[in-house]
Image 1 (cartoon, rainbow, N blue to C red):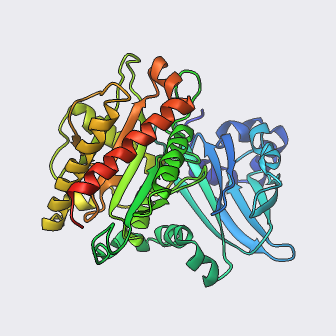
Image 2 (spheres, rainbow, N blue to C red):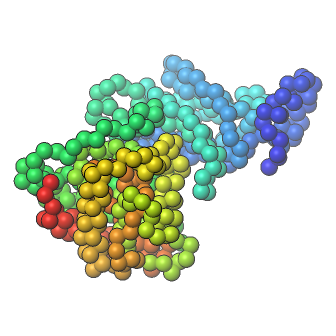
Image 3 (cartoon, protein in one colour):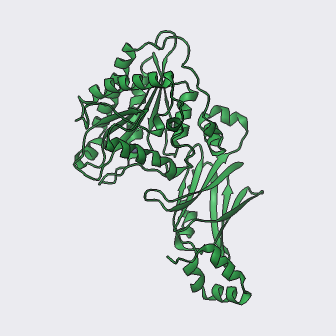
Length: 413
Ligand SMILES: [Zn+2]
C-alpha cells in the first residue's frame, strides 16, 4: 500500500478545493492513499454482538446515535467503499439479538458511513486494536444490551464484560475467600470450566480446518455433563457459545462464582506437525519451565489482543502480589494437574510426563487452583482426526473428571 500517512493526505486535501475536487472525480488519487478495509466480520452471541473491520492501516472514526429507529452511526475517515465493506449487510443474521441491519455508503469523498440499525437499546463500545498474530489493524464495535440492572444481575458475564471495557476490572476484583465449609460435605465443590478462545479468536486451526475453539467447547460440554451428575459438585462455564471472552473476564468469572477449581481447556499447535500428546500447565511464580512453555504462554496470552484490549498482561507477575495464598494455590494446581495428567495418560500419549509451569494470564486467579489442559495437538494430523471424534472427546472428558474426583478425595477445602 501507499506510504502516504492519512494525516498528511488530509492536510494535502485541505490545501485547495480544486485538489479535492480532482481527487474525488478521478477516484484514483484518493483510493491510492486511503486505508483499505480487507475484512469485515459480524459475530452475534447471546451476550453481545461484535463487528470487526480489519484494515491495512489504523482506522479513524466518529460515532453518534440516533433514535426512531435506534441507530448507531459510525463515520470512518480516509476510507473508500469497496466490495468487502459492502458485504457487511449480508453478514447480519436475522437471529442476531441486537443488530437488525447494517447499511454502508460513501458519505463524502473521504468518509464511509456505517449505519447499524438496532433491535433494542444498546450500549455500544468502540475501540481499535493494533495488529497481532495474523490480524491487521482493527476497529471493533461491541453492541451490549442496555436494559438496566435486572439483566446484568441475571448475567454475571455481561456485567464483567462491561466492567472490563470500562477499565474497572483492571483494579482486579478483591480476593474472595473460598466458600465456607467443606466442599462435598457442607456445600458442593465449585468447578469453572474454561473452553479456550471463541468468537473472533479461533485458536489453533488443524490441517483439515478443525478449529480449536469448537473442539474445546465440545469437550467442555461433555465434561460439564459428567460433573452435573455428581451431586457433590457444581459446574459453570466461562463460555457456552461461540463468543470472544477476554482472559481477564474468564478469571474474574471464576472468582465471582468462588470456584474451587479452574480448568482451561485447549488443543495444542506447533509448527512441526509431528508434535503430539496431551500436556497440562500450571501457573509459575518464576519463569516458564521450558522454552516451549514460554512460547505457549505468550501465544495464549496474545489471544486477549486478538479480540480485546489487553489491560494488564503481567500484573500479577510484576508485582509482589504473590503471597502464601498464591503459593498454596500453585502447589494445589500442581497436585490437581498431576491427578488429571495421570488419567489422561491412559487415553492419549503424553507430550511431557510432568506438569509444566508458565505465566498464563488465564491461570492468574491467585486463590483458585487452576490448570490449563492441552488435550492434544490439533496441528498433528492423527490427533486432529481423533479430536473430531465423539469417542475421543468423551474419553478426554472422562479422564479429566476422574482426575477431579481423585484430587477432590485428597484435598480438604
Ligand atoms: Zn488454545
